[in-house]
Image (cartoon, rainbow, N blue to C red; front, side):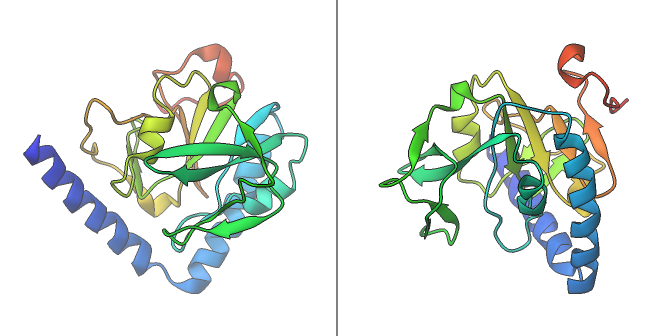
Length: 200
């Protein structure tokens, strides 16, 4: 257990190094290409999806969300050690983590198990769908037992060719989308990813 956590710390450091190494102009170009990739993917989807407000270094789903309003969007808010989700918030409050979150006093609470899919940020992913977060476990707890589609979002530089360390509680992604690729994980049923390319 201690060895896995040590490897996770090292992997997070490497992921952060890769993120910081990206130049501003490069990130802007990658983001524009990512928008096209994610928008094309979302045009085929429907239902209720969760998104997120990006922090520095994270790829942003916002432009693609704005172009795909046929999907109903919900956003997470940290409450104690868990995530709550709110439908179509119009007012945002900055959390202690520096993340823009829905104002719960004027937003409609939405149950995560009623969602069709979640867009999930991460520091790093591997090609098996393993996600490396920032170590707080919010998404791992929120998505435990979740039956919908789990879609990791990142820049290509955050995709590790080697397997990332994984513990029993770590939630795997079904799909990972970057500015270059859409990776489909082999553990996900065919009917959910019909029309997309597997990561074989």
